[in-house]
Image (cartoon, rainbow, N blue to C red; front, side, top):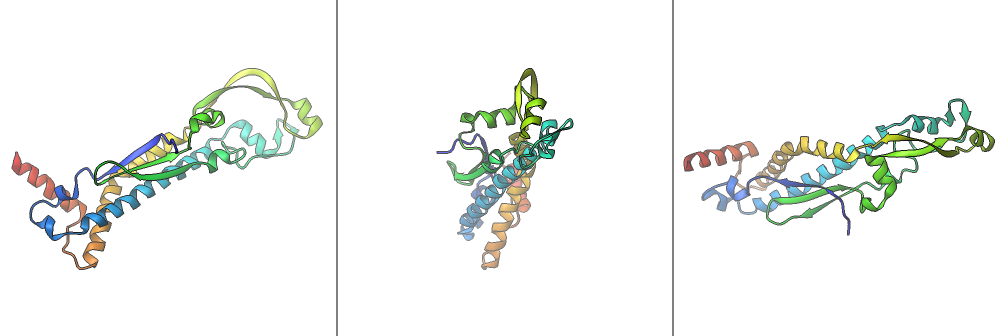
Length: 218
């Protein structure tokens, strides 16, 4: 069972029945199912985008050592270059193991999306590269020059900032969430109307109806 902690909910904020009040709701039978499918698609796309942004952030989180590692040259001492980028992508495992999933949550119109690493808390390397860590290892120019392979030795502690890729992914999802609600509704409405169903209106129209009804109750 995965334990991704970056969970978000795609919730239209109002049920379909609330957005299509009164007798008209009975006339759009079947729209609810289309809307659920659209919500799932939107949630999946948001979760995928979380992974994409996180991966991009990892790759762009370059370090001076990362640049030297890729160049195979650290202050004039040459060695065999290694890694996939100058960011947090030495072997690529941290980058490649970012995944997403979508699950149904309790209640209608709510889908739970998540992205991140499965059981990341058990992976010390991922925790350090994501959140930052104190490095006690320093480049050893003598052994490196002698072997042609990058070598290290213990030295003065130095703080290495974390990539913070997961917060970047969450922020990206937050910015797109409102548009995602609207897109799910409008996609479902388009499919429903093309199949000959009465128009439930677009999302903004549905929200306007809802707000108008709430105003009358006050």
